[in-house]
Amino acid sequence: MALSPLISLSLTNACNKVTLYENTAAYNASTNAGGWGTPNINTSAITLAYVSVYPYSTVVTTPSAQGTGTIATVGPNNVFTDTTHISGTFAVGQALVGIGVAPGTIITGLLTGTGANNGGTYTVNIAQSVSSTTISGLTTSTNFYLKNGSTDVYAATAGAPTPGAFTALTNQTWTNPDGIYRVVYTITDGTDIYTNGEVHELFLCNLCNCRESLVAKLLNECDSKHLKDLKERLDQIDVFMYGIKAAFGCGDFATATSILNTASTYCSTLANCDCGCGC
Image (cartoon, rainbow, N blue to C red; front, side, top):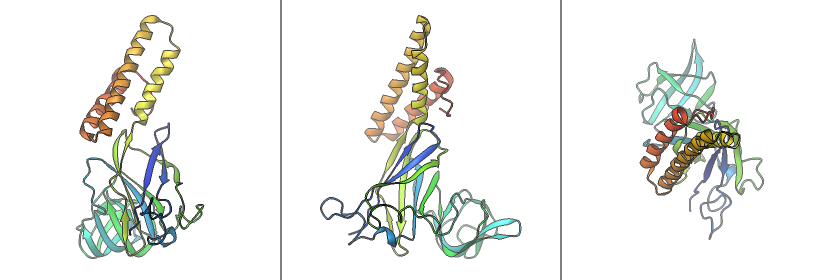
């Protein structure tokens, strides 16, 4: 057997916060063979767990690079040292993850690092002190820690170390636009690495807010000409949303994205939806 971690994400109406739901649940031989507990690991065995979110078109290599290294303040710089390089290529813009590594740590520049050399050094954006550990570089839009030294969403959860489904993180910062994203959930016990299967999420929060803004205007409009105009705009948004969801449901992500791009342009430049959330 092997653990098959499960995760899902949901945006709030504000479009700038996301909640993560941990859905792995306890092992059951007939209904949940990939769950927590014997013959799989349970949550107490986890040394590092994180969720990475990528645009659907990104070719995901998890991780993009990996090395045994440290992070420390050296002179004016916050420096990641790739003491013993393991695999891949570190690059500017990658998020660094590892036990003790601060959330949001990004490589900002190359010092002596070529991307793959032992002892290579790189500047990072956050001052911190991380002793020697395995550090991975991810080319990701957003990264969320579930367990990382100071963070552990599993320990206090009802039923731990073999909990049922639970809310892992709430109101986490989200700065990405509407679109289709691949969600990669990675768990390690220090020996083995477990990831979820292919998971994609469709986020239409901004477009939904645009629609609701038009509905509010429609309800408060008395002029018949303006009513007709607002109804036409609302109908167009509904057509867009139907097309996006239908294409996504069929796995035609290219078509869904094309319609979404057109809808976003319509919302922001033609529909006058005033959604106030980057639609």
